[in-house]
Length: 160
Image (tube, rainbow, N blue to C red; front, side, top):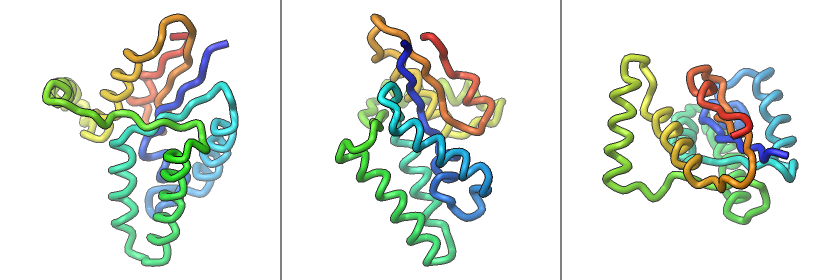
């Protein structure tokens, strides 16, 4: 059986956290349910790219209502603390960047500039591609970018 790996995108985390002006209730409920399923499935792993942590934190800090900002922040920190404690099948990825990594990201941004792909998405794609290189080739994987963006979703690999 192939292992299921999900690279979570900022837009999904914003839905789950119900960040004002960044979610709708139907999508939030759908993705929250998927999160529960994927977090309890022993054959699944959720990857949290560092860029998603940064982008999500920035969106939360821009919330004008102090009560909503605090609520979203607390849920966000609960998720991050669960990762640090190993209580959820999540992993961080994409932190140890070097100069050659930045050069690769610049090249990818030049390639995708015409498509108006933002730097956050480019960092997710770069992390995704680097993660693929780390996978042992003695088993199969279904690896996808868990997103609402079709251009990112198209990079998913099944039976990899």
